[in-house]
Length: 78
Image (tube, rainbow, N blue to C red; front, top):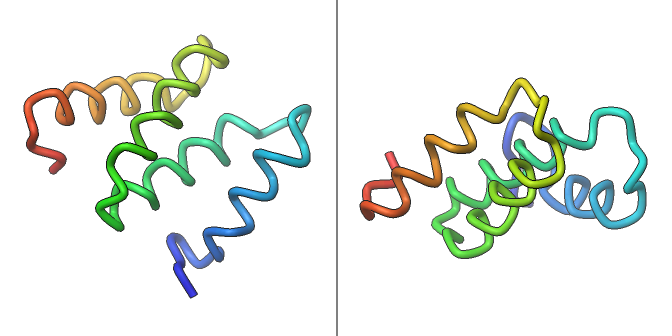
C-alpha cells in the first residue's frame, strides 16, 4: 500500500478521476502530487502540481506547488 498522510494513493487518484467537482479537489490534487513526489515519481508529480496551478488559481496550496515545480526545474526536489 502506497500511503501518504494515511490515505492510500489510489484513493487520491480515484477522487481526482471520478469526482472532478469535489469541493476540495485542489487539496486532493496537492496531496496526490506530493505523494507521487515522495515516491520519486517526479514526472507524474509535476503533471499534478501544474494542474493545481492551472485549475485552482485561488488554492491555498498554489505557492507550495509553485515552489515544488521550481525545485524540480533545478533537479533538487527537496
